[in-house]
Length: 258
Image 1 (cartoon, rainbow, N blue to C red):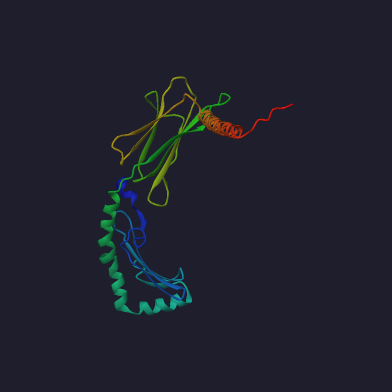
Image 2: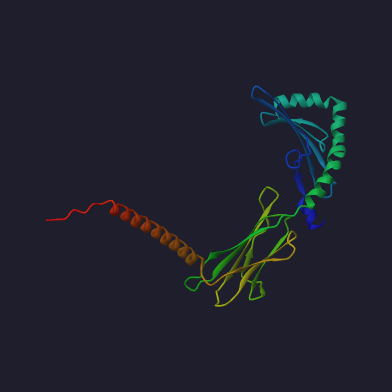
C-alpha cells in the first residue's frame, strides 16, 4: 500500500465531510429526529462498511450496520424499533445492498478527489531558546496547514545538512484534514554562519528554504522595536504639547508691570 493510500485510510463520514451522504432531519416543536448515513472504508475498499444511524435529540437510539446485517437498538425505544425494522425483510434487504450500491460507487470517486488535493505548508523559523551561559541555542522550524501528510524538514548549516542535535515531531493531524510538524535544532552559534530550514512537500515545486539571521538575537530585536515605538510616541506627544503652547501664547495679552 502506498503512502498516499494511507492518507485516506480510516473512517470518512460522507454525510458531513464530503457532502454525498444522507443527512435527514425532521423537527417539530423543538424536538429533532436525525437519520445519518456513513461509509467506513480503507484505501483498498475491500472492507467497506455501511452504517445508518437513527437519533432523537442528538441521542442515537438505533443503528444498522452492514457487517452485523441488521438493526441494533441502544435504548428501550430503540430496541423496539430495531425489532420492527428487522422483521421487515424487504427493507432490510435494501439496506444490505446499500454497501455496494451507495458506498462502493461513491467512495472510489471520493478517494480519487481527496488524493488530488495539495496544500502548501506555511513555514515559520523562530528562536526557541537563546544561547546563554555557555548553553546551546535552539531554533524551531514549524510547518502548518499542509496536505497531504508526508513532508520532509531538514536543517542546513553553511550548506551542509545537519544530522545530529535535531529533534522532529511526527506529522500531527489538526482534525480538519490538515497537518502540522515541528523540528528543533540545538546548536552553538558561530560568527558568520548560515543556518536554514529546508521543507520538501508534494505541493511545492522546489524545496522551500528559510534562512535564520543570527546577526541579532530575537529578544534584542523585540527590545529595539519596542524602544522605537516608544520614541515615536514620545515625539508625537512633545510636538502636540509644543503646538498647544504656541496656540495659547498667541492669545495672551501682555500687561506692563509697575
